[in-house]
Length: 460
Image 1: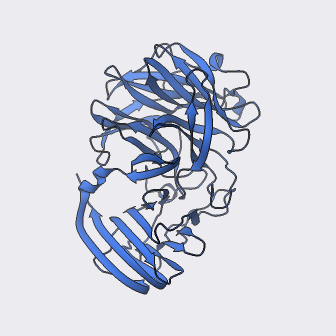
Image 2: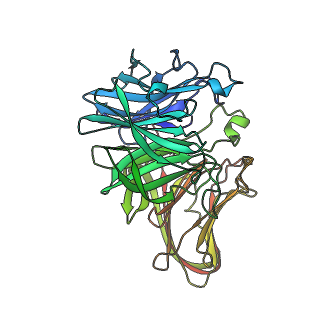
Image 3: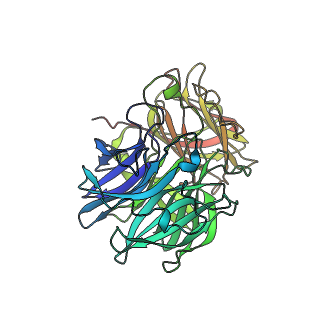
């Protein structure tokens, strides 16, 4: 499982498709897996929606999106062909459409609907993928990731009146080598009165705490011109600072919420569940509701997850060195913690703790920096060749009114940390070998702490 695709609200249910190789836990000819849910927490597995069975997609049905349109579920995806794997110049990527009823889907006879003939001069036909489709004012629009002739990433916009006949609208934005190389998985939407563009950027150059992974995901605020197809950028920032976050995609539901989900893994690293023969690889983040405050993105876990809380424990303590409580433990839990350092310069939490293993998160007050350390989390994870490491990540976080607030979701091998109301988020995988469930709070001085813990019980 990799990129989320077709994340959409159709017939009063949430649908999530995903890049899927059904025959192996290794990457292979890509299909679209399919799930649906009424609450974004419990998901029902549906039949495979798309398989690579046509000349224009025979080597993979790559990423794309979906909308509800007049009672139809419209999927827009990337058709991938690679006739000679040792000659990448022969790769072709096109945009295709399939229409269905929420379970079965039929590809259009007129596919591909956007191909080389539609592209502006200099646009790559080998790297042209991941269309995001939407409808506005009776017209269909799509943005697609592409590589420009100078090798930098760009986003192209297209429009249509009927989903079949498409025209190039304009170049939304071009990297000019300032934001990585190839741009993938674009998403463009309005949020709190402003236009927001999401990008997954390959081979980002590290800049201090920012872009420590080999690939990154960013959001840009600005304004999109529907006449020219251009995006006037105002700000840019990283979406998630953890080890494992890529290819985010959003939907808007019947409550008006803009909800994001992403692939919680990272390219170019071995995945322990595959390496050790567990038969699966890849997972998704918890869905998150987005909002903007002064061009700053905030992410909050969906409220629906609170329906699955059980066994609430609350503590309010002042401690130094370490604090443990047998009632505060587990490996499928939600923690809400507020730290107020009194004279501590470092404080934090250890989860999935056993005799030899632990995952550590902590705050350095002098640096105003939050750390996530999975050095001793369990199965080692090898960094990609261009990453400094795959064991420690940092994010700059000032205290808010003298406090650090954390909302933590731990689900055995997934860890998502929402910091200071979701202003910063860190999403990561961990792979403990030992079934450690202990939790320890620690500090090198005195700290006041309020903590709430719930078990999360989803079940059948």
